[in-house]
Amino acid sequence: MKNDINYELILEELFDGLFILDNQLQIVSWNHAMESMTCLMKDDVLGKYVFDVIPSLEEKCGYFFQEAILEENRLIELQSYTFQKPKSQINISVRARFIPMENGGQTEGIVGILKPISDEASVQDEYTNLLKSVVMNTHDAVLITRPEPIDAPEGPMIIYANPAFTAMTGYTQEEILGKTPRILQGPKTSNKEKKRIRKALSNWERVDCELLNYTKDGKEFWVDLGIVPVQNEEGYYTHWIAVQRDVSERRDYLHQLEHMNDELEKKVLERTKELENFSYFLAHDLKQPTRSISSFIDLINKENGNLSDNAYRYLEYVKQGSKSINRIVDAMLNLTVLSQKELQLEYYRFDNIIGEAMSGLSALIRESKAVFEIGAMPEVKVDFALAVRLMLNLLENAIKYSGERQPYIRIFAEQFKKQVSIRITDNGVGFAKSEKHGIFDLFNRGKQDVKRADGYGIGLAICKRVMDKHSGNIWIEANEEEGSTVVLSFPAKASRGQASKKARTRMK
Image (cartoon, rainbow, N blue to C red; front, top):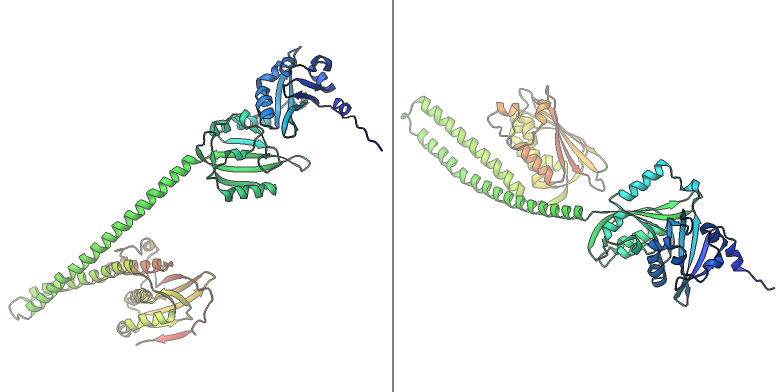
């Protein structure tokens, strides 16, 4: 059965205006809708140069027809375009699409489709006008593309670019319409980000990224890019909207800031190293004079009868001062050595660390008749020597500051998912909550330290340094009336070991 379809008749009956031009831009077809729209009859325009028929088309469409369509084979779409009727000079607003006609890879003409915008549709409400104003005046570049195809070189095809885009990239709107945003990409544009963008477009998903683009003259610039799909009321995706902000200056500033930070950290490390070395040698050199002072005082004391009782008492004060200087020097040396020490980390049962510290304090524990209650302890990854020094300082403090009471010290552990806490609670004199601020600072002395001649505000500073080196934390829960609790928080072991059985130990 023969099926003859009169395509010419179909084109004539379309509601949209349709015309066809040859490659010399002469009119070869002009349907009824074009006659109604322009008030120009078909017989009067066929064979004529299109810009002679409608002169107002030439201002904007001259470039599109000659170069974009005929030479570069690009489809051009204008969402809103206004031209004048040749006779009445009345403006008419249309949506326009100009399509290249190909034959064997050569563009032989142009199909133009004009869809009138009704008076009702052309009346924009306040919000639409505001939105247009924002898009036109924003410093961010805005592109609107057709939804498909997404693969270069055909798509996604740009149908709108705002003035900020022109200022940012150097491309005019005429140069960019009908092309793909990929013309902004270049040799250093991240392939990883390009693949991520393509995947999002394929899935009709929003995508945000930071991308290196290139201007028309090849200059690199960085943008924060956001691309979102637009749906119509029926749920079909009709466009992509891309908004990009030039962040080149911000990236340069951040790069400079990072470089400055690196240089500053390097200088801080150098200065810290110098100060540590200075402190070490200063402390080492101070010990010799203080030892000499103590030795000469001992020699003077052997000269019986040559000095008064007051003189001997004053010499004893000097000797005690010399010993105090030695203790401070030793503490400072410990602090310096601690800063330079490389950790030897292994897993240890914390009750073994506590036991080692108690052995070092055995004389003080017997003298004070201190009582210890030690709960089940976990395994903790620590430098054994530093952990023992940590507990020596804390247990010695708990005993020293017990006042007139018999020292009673409880040590127990709390296991959490990512942390393990060791709590050391004493029944000592306590301290005010106001003293918690700066309690771990070097040379900070609480009210109880001030009362004691042998308190120098170094022990807790050493404890803080030890915990910092173990990526842990230390804090004190204060009780001004009686006792306090020191809490040590370490990273927990991945697989929990068996804790030791609860034990109660008393050393006399």
